[in-house]
Length: 422
Image (tube, rainbow, N blue to C red; front, top):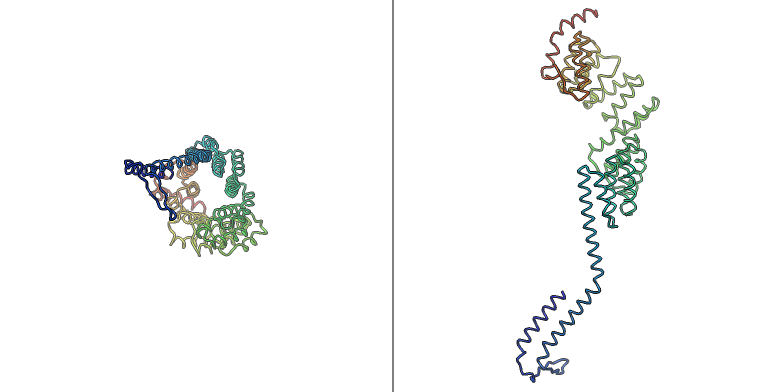
């Protein structure tokens, strides 16, 4: 602004001089001011303008001299901030490239004494935790906390995440409960707390929390159920024989129709010798809504009426025939009734849908019972290969034709086994 004013005045002075500079020096110019007359020689005008320019320049120079320290300080701060941002960008890039220790050193090398330092220390802490250096991670978190009071929530949330990663869910639950009280609308903290409660099995606290999350629409229903299921299941699994029924009844209604919770309760009932009760529970759940995990579990229940179980499983297969766990269940139940051909065919179909070590072992046992020890041995070998992450060999390598390969030359052996058994 000063430069613009000076430039205007200089131009004005030049124009004035060109116009009036050749006029007779004795000629006077009169100016009316306050109803009076003020006279002065015309050639004074350029010099008056020049004096004004000099005065303005002097004021500008003095302003620069007095404001120089502040300007230098601002420039220094800006330079430090630029270096800090560059260190943050470079450090994060190094960490993302897997150079954890180098990235941590870069992040903590350029500190400008602002709250940005907390972000750097938090990033360094996450990096140290990722490489298993827990003590270093804790040190960085403390430095982050010391660098900015405003970063307290971020630091404590990161600390809770690290506790969860280390499997220390009890401490994480305590910390996250406090954080939730301090920031009750924070969706991320609620999600972390819900995940932690899933591991600690605090189903009552989980129910209260998810009610809030549903009201606030923090997560969709599918995500909420995924968080709730572990808490329900763990509460059931940790209950004693005398408490498990009470724990089951104390769960919210939606839990008692959840496949994960139903499976956990059925499993506990089987442990306590209540197989018929477990069968009724899973049977009811599958009739209400089919679920692969429960369908697979149904074949392992040793109820007093295997024939009825097989009948139920075959009825479900009319609408869910492409369920590998259900086909495996039919195979297991048929084997319990020594219906070897049916068992073999159902297990073969399950293997075609989902080949895994368990189904290979089941097939091997059925083939062994049918007298085909060669193919049984091949099934057992493939079970071991699959468990080790290797590709199947022999007939298992040709899944589309597995059923026919299994049936080859077994008929006579199966008949012989049946006659011998009778």
